Image (tube, rainbow, N blue to C red; front, side, top):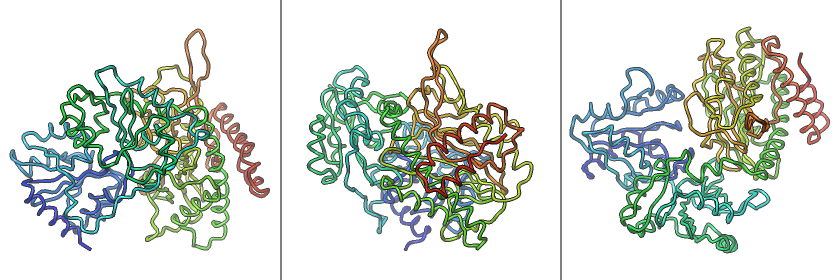
Length: 598
């Protein structure tokens, strides 16, 4: 197998052939999802860096890779002896990609980038920043140099039954069409696979962790098209889709199809969710391009509001997940008592997946599990390794952040467990994180509130101790779709999207002490209407997660009476809801772990 150095040489040979001076290799694919098939892992193939976020830039002489603080240590190790310089993003003195390229190439040069995997808006922004250098869209530069490239998967697509989806395809199409801007002959282009899966009540298995399938869609005022690989939709399902007015097209024909729109048509798409390559094809026939500037686009905004059937599906998923969590925590405690030395992070990650699989409705993990012991928990996106197992013993904290896909909902839960003696600071931090999670859970707020207005409810207690977590407090969650979904969020940075009833969002404040420990407590919350009165409409949250919180590290005096009451009520709901689904010994264990604190 070629080393990184050899692969860089192959890439530089490509640069010579294509008359380019450098190439930018971002992470991602042509559908702009968080996860993608190995076929698109070009940055990893060249550099050897396996982190999920990063951009590689290769010139004829040098190479550099930009990534964020989550991956600094990992990148340093994986880039060793590759000749690739690590660029630490958001660290003082680190040049941006355009700055570095200008320093390398001067004022004259052509920069290549794969136009299939960079969005229209990103391409235009990067082009502007690179001036006087020229950014050039190219077609899959790795097609000729990656000799053992994995094949793209196009697995069978299946229907999500109406009793799980809660709305017909016809109804969804009516809502999408009514939201399309008024213009002459509009054609709304959708590249994001989760939006397409939601719109057509379909699911698949092409993408890791997400029940998605490679696809495009186009919706006009009188027609609807879905572009999938030939043979992935069975005849019966094809007929069902046709009954909803959906025409099935070949996946590879999307570009040719868009070029058929002439000057009488208006192509509409979110500029950050259509590739520059597809955009160029779309306008080549003379059609106008109209940017959908709404956050998340038309389908993203509609998808974010879960209907009553989807909400009930989440509730059912949380019950099934909680059963697995109870068994998992019991296993953890039992193995710790044995002190065999065989308990590792990786073993625990496999254990909870195995326990979830006992449910016939389980369809897999919703993201790579995080099981982090001691100092490893200070890395927010740490992943346990089977090659270098980390043993767990009765000391410090263990942070477990995992999620699951069930046919009726997606879960994402984090619990931090006190495994041994803790310092006063550790107990205080644990309590303040819990306090923040409870504060947000109890929020009542007026219609029109954005997530940034609520963020400090969760972040404030941690800040009071002079500490701060760098990630957001909450992200949207899909209904048997992507565990990280928009357009809403709860974070310090401004997001214009208002929180609305039906939105499902995570609630996950944290504390990270580098080299020592990490604490995160995460529930999933559903926005609901609370009341309407003479002052207006008010919303609140229903907590969907049903996993007990470890009370052993709580410093009760740091919690207010209402916060203690909330936690006791929460544990009462957990016990009453989950205990009937457990064996006798499991229910007895849960009763002890959900006892009231005072």
